[in-house]
Image 1 (tube, rainbow, N blue to C red):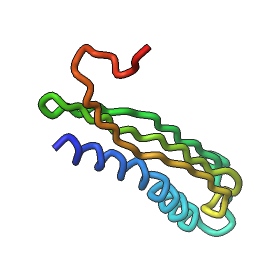
Image 2 (image 1 turned 30 degrees about the vertical axis):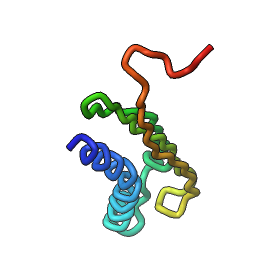
Image 3 (image 1 turned 60 degrees about the vertical axis):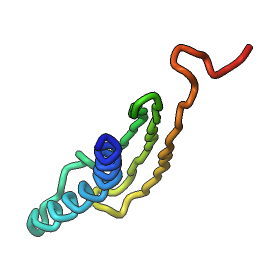
Length: 103
Protein backbone atom coordinates (compact mmCIF):
# COMPACT_ATOMS: atom_id res chain seq x y z
CA UNK A 1 0.00 0.00 0.00
CA UNK A 2 2.82 2.40 0.90
CA UNK A 3 4.68 1.50 -2.29
CA UNK A 4 1.58 2.36 -4.33
CA UNK A 5 1.38 5.71 -2.55
CA UNK A 6 5.07 6.38 -3.33
CA UNK A 7 4.56 5.69 -7.04
CA UNK A 8 1.44 7.87 -7.07
CA UNK A 9 3.46 10.76 -5.59
CA UNK A 10 6.20 10.22 -8.19
CA UNK A 11 3.64 10.23 -11.02
CA UNK A 12 2.07 13.48 -9.78
CA UNK A 13 5.47 15.17 -9.50
CA UNK A 14 6.51 14.07 -12.99
CA UNK A 15 3.19 15.10 -14.56
CA UNK A 16 3.02 18.49 -12.81
CA UNK A 17 5.13 20.36 -15.43
CA UNK A 18 2.99 18.94 -18.26
CA UNK A 19 -0.20 20.06 -16.52
CA UNK A 20 1.21 23.54 -15.85
CA UNK A 21 2.31 23.93 -19.48
CA UNK A 22 -1.16 22.99 -20.74
CA UNK A 23 -2.79 25.44 -18.33
CA UNK A 24 -0.42 28.21 -19.41
CA UNK A 25 -1.14 27.56 -23.11
CA UNK A 26 -4.90 27.67 -22.60
CA UNK A 27 -4.66 30.86 -20.55
CA UNK A 28 -2.65 32.66 -23.24
CA UNK A 29 -4.89 31.54 -26.11
CA UNK A 30 -8.04 32.72 -24.30
CA UNK A 31 -6.63 36.12 -23.26
CA UNK A 32 -8.03 37.88 -26.34
CA UNK A 33 -6.42 39.51 -29.35
CA UNK A 34 -3.79 42.14 -28.74
CA UNK A 35 -3.58 41.45 -25.01
CA UNK A 36 -0.12 40.74 -23.63
CA UNK A 37 0.33 38.26 -20.81
CA UNK A 38 2.55 39.15 -17.89
CA UNK A 39 6.01 37.66 -17.40
CA UNK A 40 4.83 35.74 -14.34
CA UNK A 41 5.26 32.02 -14.93
CA UNK A 42 7.82 32.48 -17.70
CA UNK A 43 10.59 30.70 -15.77
CA UNK A 44 10.10 27.95 -13.22
CA UNK A 45 12.19 25.46 -11.27
CA UNK A 46 11.12 22.29 -9.46
CA UNK A 47 13.47 20.49 -7.06
CA UNK A 48 12.58 17.30 -5.22
CA UNK A 49 14.94 15.18 -3.11
CA UNK A 50 13.02 12.75 -0.95
CA UNK A 51 13.67 9.32 0.58
CA UNK A 52 10.79 7.33 2.03
CA UNK A 53 11.57 4.28 4.19
CA UNK A 54 9.02 1.46 3.95
CA UNK A 55 9.28 -1.21 6.65
CA UNK A 56 7.93 -4.71 6.06
CA UNK A 57 8.63 -6.91 9.09
CA UNK A 58 12.41 -6.81 9.72
CA UNK A 59 13.25 -5.47 6.26
CA UNK A 60 13.34 -1.81 5.29
CA UNK A 61 13.22 -0.58 1.70
CA UNK A 62 14.31 3.02 1.12
CA UNK A 63 12.65 4.54 -1.96
CA UNK A 64 14.42 7.66 -3.25
CA UNK A 65 13.25 10.28 -5.72
CA UNK A 66 15.50 13.07 -6.97
CA UNK A 67 13.98 15.37 -9.58
CA UNK A 68 15.15 18.67 -11.01
CA UNK A 69 13.16 20.34 -13.78
CA UNK A 70 13.31 23.88 -15.08
CA UNK A 71 11.94 26.03 -17.86
CA UNK A 72 13.43 29.29 -19.04
CA UNK A 73 12.56 31.65 -21.81
CA UNK A 74 9.35 32.51 -23.59
CA UNK A 75 6.00 33.19 -22.01
CA UNK A 76 4.42 30.20 -23.74
CA UNK A 77 5.41 26.55 -23.86
CA UNK A 78 8.18 27.20 -26.41
CA UNK A 79 10.87 27.90 -23.79
CA UNK A 80 13.96 25.84 -23.00
CA UNK A 81 13.38 22.83 -20.77
CA UNK A 82 15.98 20.89 -18.81
CA UNK A 83 15.26 17.99 -16.52
CA UNK A 84 16.94 15.16 -14.66
CA UNK A 85 15.39 12.43 -12.52
CA UNK A 86 16.53 9.51 -10.40
CA UNK A 87 14.24 6.92 -8.86
CA UNK A 88 15.86 4.20 -6.80
CA UNK A 89 15.19 1.63 -4.12
CA UNK A 90 17.61 0.23 -1.57
CA UNK A 91 16.84 -2.86 0.51
CA UNK A 92 18.48 -2.63 3.94
CA UNK A 93 19.11 -6.19 5.19
CA UNK A 94 21.52 -5.25 7.98
CA UNK A 95 20.47 -6.35 11.47
CA UNK A 96 18.78 -3.62 13.53
CA UNK A 97 21.29 -1.58 15.54
CA UNK A 98 24.27 -2.80 13.51
CA UNK A 99 26.29 -0.56 11.25
CA UNK A 100 26.59 -2.06 7.75
CA UNK A 101 30.01 -0.41 7.26
CA UNK A 102 33.00 -2.03 8.96
CA UNK A 103 35.95 0.06 10.13
